[in-house]
Image 1 (cartoon, rainbow, N blue to C red):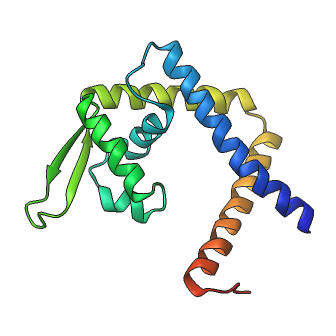
Image 2 (cartoon, rainbow, N blue to C red):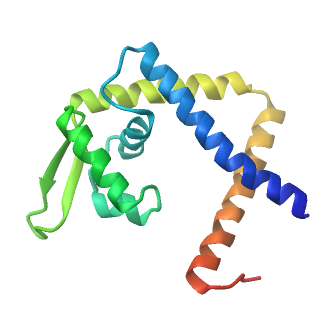
Length: 153
């Protein structure tokens, strides 16, 4: 059982780096040079939602200083707007501008094209569903370890 687990761990990191390379390539192909792949992924994760910076950190997507740095750049380049909450002045809400929504649509189209390139047959769908299930189990196992300091069986 150990070997497949270790292979998945290696693949997670490698696939994330490759995916950022894919985004970088698409940004370059579209002539978008003012942001990087990590920032494009951040915009994609925000999407059409109004989100609070803290939510992005709490969901585990981004580290504190990393997200703050990227949000500052995305705001300066016109992809995001920031607005202080009327109820909690410490809380900042983020929303994509039209430019940000356009980039988000570009990433969504890329994602759809990549998904279709994987195949649309039943075997591929089943295989991907099984992979998602395995990855969610792995996430739960790691989250339990972080929260409880031990492995829950």
